[in-house]
Every structure is written in C-alpha cells, then in structure tokens.
Length: 543
Image (cartoon, rainbow, N blue to C red; front, side, top):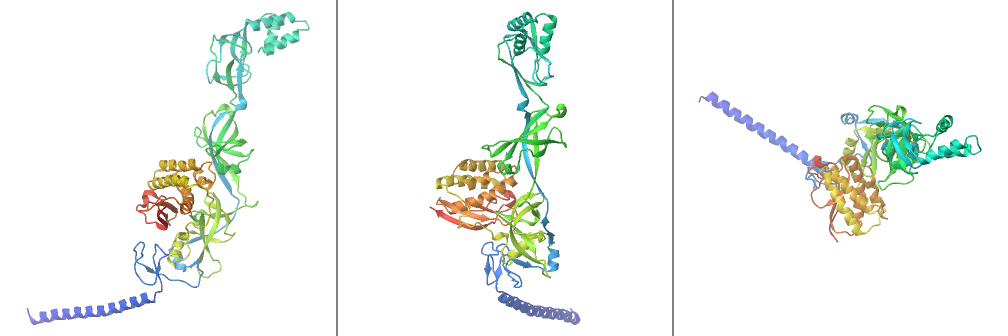
C-alpha cells in the first residue's frame, strides 16, 4: 500500500469521527430541549382515554398507549373548540343552517285483504225439500244476481201454490201471495204461476246478490229442512284491508284518513284506501287492528293478498311546522343527542357542544324539540372529528355520557328474584348480539318481555322490548335503551354476582352490562372482537 492511499484512508476515518461527534453534540442538545419541553408541559393525556391526565410523560394505565400533551386554549369555554381555517379544511368540516319546514311522518302498516263482512250473505232453506238440481256446485264460482242456485222439490211449496191458485180472484189472494214470498218464491215466479194457472213441481231458487260462492253446505240430491244453511256468498266489489298498527303509531291514525297500499301481485302499482275503523283495544302483541275500505274495480284484487300500507301524517309542534336538523349532524349516545354548533360571531371557527332533544326522523332529518334555534349553523360533516379533538383536550364530549346510576331516573319497583331472571335473559341477549345472532337475540328479548308483561313496577323495563325489531340494527337500538335501565336496576339491587358496565364510544355504540371478564361488544358483534370498551362501573362479589 503506498503512502498516498494510506493518507486518504486515515483522512476519511477522521472525517467520520468528527461527524459522529458533531451529531452526538447536536443530538444531546435536542434531547435536552425535548426534556425541557416535557418539563414545561403541565398535563399529559391519552388519546383513547382523555379522562387520564398526568403531570409527566408516560403510558396510559388503561390501554398502555404513549401519552400526548394536553394543550388548552383559554380563549374558548370548556364546551367549545377553536380550529384554524386550514385545520377545518383538512378535517373536511361542513356546516348547514337549520330551519323550519313542513314535514310528514310516514307510518308503515302491514296486513292483508279480506272479504268485507257487510257484503257476506248466508242463504238458507226456506222450506223442507229435496235438491233436484244444483247449479252453485263449486267454491269460487261467480254468480250474478237472480241467477239460479238450485232447483228444489218441496211438498210444502206445491201445497202453497195450490192454495194460491184457489185464492185467485178472492180476498185471500194477497195473503196466499205473501205466503209464497216467505217460502222463497220470487214475485216474477208468482206472476208465472198465475199466468200459467198451474203448479211448479220443482221451484228454482235464485241468488239475492251478485258475488262469489265461498261456502257450500249441500250437494245435489240432499234433503234439507227449513233453516238449513245452503250457501255463503260475498260481493267482491268491495273488500276490507285489515292492517296492524304498533302501539306507538296509534295516536297518529284517525278514521277517515287516506292512505296508499301496495301488493306483491302488482309491483310498482299503488292503490288508494280510507281508514274506516280503528279497533278500541290493543292486542297482547302490542298492536291494534286498522280496517280500510277498498273499492275492487274489475275484481282485480283477491282476498288473502298481503299488503303494505303507508300513512302520511303532517308533523306539527304547538300547531306550527317543526324545526329540522340533518341526521348526519346528530350523535346519539343512549338517551342523549348531541350536535356541534358553529359560533357565527367569531372570526375563527369555534364549535360548541350542544345537547338537544329530538323526536321523529323524517327522511334524512330529525325533528328538534329543544336545544336549537332556527338559523343556527350545525356541523353536518366532521362532527366526530371535532368530538375527538374535544376528547383530546379533556373537554365534554359524547364520550362523557354514562348513566347516572345514583339518580332515580327510572321507575322500577320489582323484586330481586324477578330482576335476577331478567338479568339472566339480558346477559343472553348481550351474548347473542355480540355473536350477530339476530334470531336468538330476538328470543332473549321476548323472554324479558314475557317476564315484565303486566307486572306493576316493571313498565320501564318492558317498554324497549315491545318495539318491532325487524333487523339486528333496530334490535341494537332497543338494546341500548334496555341497557340503561338494566344497569340502573342492578346498581340499585342486592342481587349477587360480579358485574361490569362498559361503554363503547364509537358511533352506534353505547353502554351494556356484562359479567366480569373480556368485553364482547353487542353493538358491533364480531366486527369488533376483541373490544377494549371502557369500564364505567363495576361490582365484585355482591351479596
């Protein structure tokens, strides 16, 4: 190796050592600055559990994530969040001015078409005799008014005809004629007997109405006695649509109300109807029967067809059109509904948390009962991002809600024995929802319904179980309300067992009660397994 090459190698080593020393010096300075920054930071919090606030950097004692600094903005209140214009654009925050508008609530009813009871006619034998000829000989046959049903041989009718012929031209003629009418002979037949001056050996029995034969009680050759049912006929030009309305929808239905219904037999076509009768009682299924008169033009409709009806009811609040808020703006947690409202008077975007009261959902909007005013700007896109930022600053958010277990917010007065049975089925309901098993979850709900049905003091527990739940999503909404009541009941009881009340902060989540152990989320099922839902209350080895 020559000297020139050796000198180059030694020079490169010296440069590397110098660079390393310089980097160490700079790194030490940065480390010191970072340490000083940590020392200057007053509070550290967890992004998943903002209730954790510690004076030093470390890990969250719940989920073991690294803590982040908590930066408070003293220029806004504890329920407000200030954002820069750029941050607002990055978060894709959008607001909408809310207003008052005409709105209709749609009530969906199901049922089926049936014969109109007022159009059903039972035809019976007016006299003793033998059926010589039967024309109405099969069910479903369409028969016109005055069309022959059968011919009957009757000694009693023959005797009455002879008596009538003998009375012709005398004072007894009118009485004899009326006797024939009472025995089922028509006026035109009486005229025929009089004109022919002879007795009919067999008498033709005709239909008093046009309709369809729906029952037949005799066959050709049968002997019948006076009063025996022969046929049942119904006029199909008018039908009844028998619908079932759920208990919570009854108040919006009135006699005379117009509606439209559809049938699977006629896809894409709707038929008009008018409510004619509302049954005065509620069945054990918590439904009431609604009757609608339907005109059956061209006899297209058939009894037994299943129908879906929609009744549109105008919504009025104190006699005025309601205030509506977009559904995308509302975050629901159990009984609470929360929106974020933008301050219109601020130069910078400032958003405030607002708890509101809502009622019926109309399309993609909710009716507002309290908490908002016409013209306010609500966040319709990005509300959960604002809420997450509120959580990071340990400010009130949708996550803060948990049932007030000390306050008697529910009216429950049941024995611990009954509550223990209810809790058993509730835990089964929780398990089946976590397993996405809609059928078994529905069965568990019905068991709670049966236990509380008619039990004084258990009305609040029964209320969520009587709702119609056609999908697992709607069942989970009922489960959310049921959970609040069950948690309250267990908290204030002396039933034994280890229990945990957990809370899932994600949209669509809520509270639930479970036995101690790993969380299985009933609001999201297998899509969220395992689950790290927060424990908001716990009791061990209760006696």
